[in-house]
Length: 181
Image (tube, helix red, strand yellow):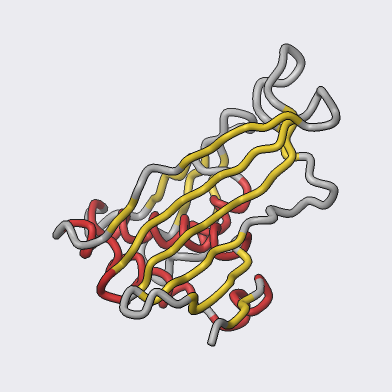
């Protein structure tokens, strides 16, 4: 039976430690050639407002150690970069990413879960950062440099149960600043 998992469910039920461990397993599977991680596909479509575009963002993959295959599909309305604006602006009617994740059983091919992906996406990025830090940081490291922004940076800060005591953040739009956990 397929279950529905909301952003609120993810906040309440998925500890960051479990998310980090899931990413470790996924990367192990990828390293031995078992996992599937296809490049994302994005496309733009005409919007009724000529100043805006519809953006779709699709990812697919599988982690055999968990017996799971996945399709992630995001849906956005954006204002593309222009002379007045150097990056795309998300302009959904609500400040929300209308993406979903569908988890399938590799064994039976049945859909196991439909999940909102907004909360999970930030946690996934943070967990990926935690796994990378674990693999490459010196044991005596005390400062973490992070160039991510917004929810992605916040996700990374939530990953550190131990390790660096200070995080230096450099943003192209804001001055560098150091944060304490």
